[in-house]
Length: 133
Image (cartoon, rainbow, N blue to C red; front, side):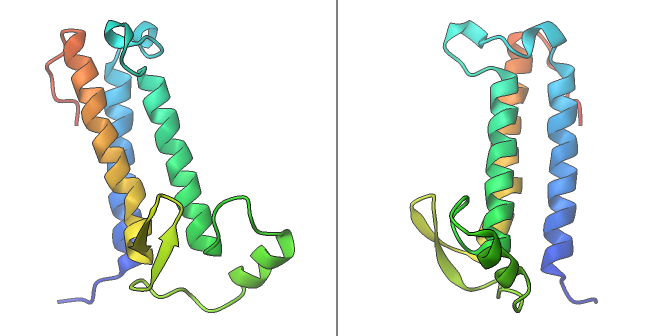
């Protein structure tokens, strides 16, 4: 049995879930993608935009270990040239609770799955009960 490669696992997981989200978003009629279901729900495009924003913030944080938009270009370059971070190290991520670096790297996939469920639900509001995975 081969050894687990955390980076490869996380990249593969994220790629698979991004595909699921894309399939589910594409299953929602184009004219409904920027419509709030029932008038109070978030639009599908708003949900996907949030996912992209969180993914970008996690990526930036894992590269720099500094909350987004707080590093100078020189500091960022110095960090990128330093040793790789350890997956089990705990840090204070700007979501209000300590997290391991692995947990932060896993967050985009978990976050996407959470919101993919919302897209699935929106599909049912438009009478689409098919699974699009």
